[in-house]
Length: 68
Image 1 (cartoon, rainbow, N blue to C red):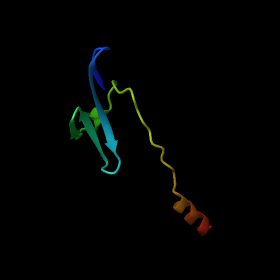
Image 2: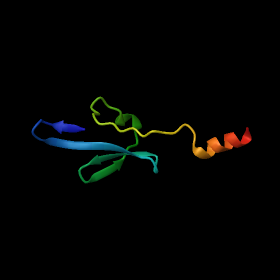
Image 3: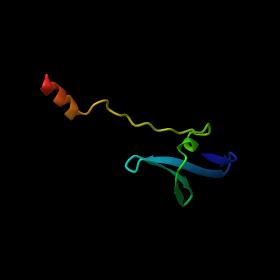
Image 4: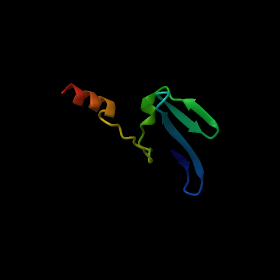
């Protein structure tokens, strides 16, 4: 997120750590755990990243084929 004017301002960010299954808030040199996940979803978000999830793994597909 950005606060300030076009010529200057302050940036903060939220990031999800998949291994920890947790959201974090980054503000300069300070990082904090986000306890209210709904606070991450705001109308001021302007950069979003998505990670593709496969519907089934290759191992699961092989198991299905082997049982047929």
